[in-house]
Image (cartoon, rainbow, N blue to C red; front, side):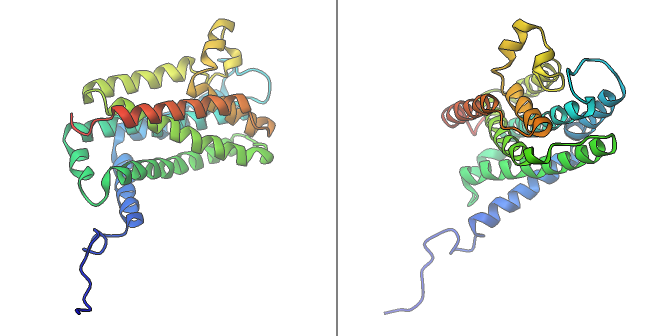
Length: 259
């Protein structure tokens, strides 16, 4: 009987282990996002400018509390939306158009590994964004509630999941040009009336009640409760979780790797 082993799996045949494949692809995704000037502008430069602008002006109204303390969690939420939704939707849409997704889907990375890499890349980009925003906020006088930091991390992770799922749903069902237009339009709308920069409580009553059910408001409300009051906002948590579950189910069913 021969003692030589016959390779029966991609790893045995010479491919890297699944974890290394995901991390390698995630590193590539991070590099692509950071080298894209337009997405870097939306993901980091504009949120940073918005934070500085909110801290030195008195309009729009942010409600009760120290202005910088209320503004910074909203800007962190904006960073999550920019990286997890806008950037991922656009990059995935064009990868799909140029058949990059189809080719990656049949490599040892696999479709599941590709999605995992996108989530990991998004979290890495968000870590950079949040670090920059935190430094700017602290320099401007931001004093987050330490007791709520763990809750804030929870909302960032769950918000990332929900918005990446929404990005994949959009990018996997529409043509790249439509994805580009819709993703940017949604970013602007959520910035203006999504309860992100301006707290939902400062919007007109009828609008505020509707906005409460948006994932953007759930994320921003949860971050403000955590970093301003040090509490876990269960209603906001439920909103983010619901969007994450629904978007994941729909993306799994409707996503097409071919344009």
